[in-house]
Length: 280
Ligand code: PAF
Image 1 (cartoon, rainbow, N blue to C red):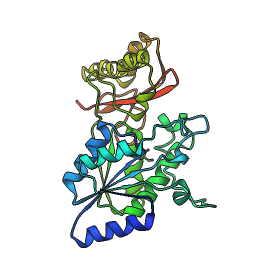
Image 2: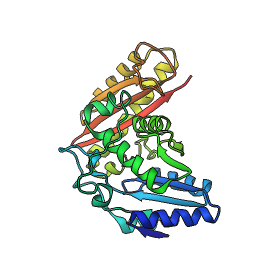
Image 3: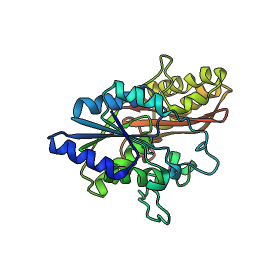
């Protein structure tokens, strides 16, 4: 497995893979790999002759008060894990290469980015879509892999790819969870033991809400149930709990399934997100 920080070298690598008749998969990441990332990599390795993993803690998607400087970074560990699952190349660009002096071009998806996390993290999705568009442009993969944990991000990226006719297939994979249900996330490493124990309640709450909706309740009744369960855990402070359309992310509080229950909570200083889709 190669590790490359230069855009030109990644382009050469991809061209060589194509000359050998290989399809190319891209797994965009910010590092601090967990089973969620590894499931995306494994799938890409199974689907494509060459897999590129980008590892870039993208400054433009962090707000001024957010955790950019303390975001977990451990390239040797990440490289070991990626190599074990068969990744061909890790792309670790410097911020100055991704955002050269004077860069002033942004990719913005309107509408879909305005609610949920977008409303609480101004500028976040503009940073995500800009960096993902750049990564897709640099690597030009046949397929790009994203996890459903960042459900809004996934729908935003799908829309960007559709609207800009980007020649890539977006492949989404399910959330990977800890045995107690907590969705895997690099930010789980910030949790104290008490917060970690409490954090499992988020998924339990979503499941209770989803069960109600499955029995015929509306999105609003489902989210009320989620909030009720969360209220029983003083270490979790809900930021939002919403029922939305699986594709448009429009409000589904007055409707039943299909919908996605989406939630963000704070456990101490750590912000956790999770979601659960209800189809039938
Ligand atoms: O989901 C993430 O880790 C990031 O938002 C992404 C897609 C790698 C863009 O920086």
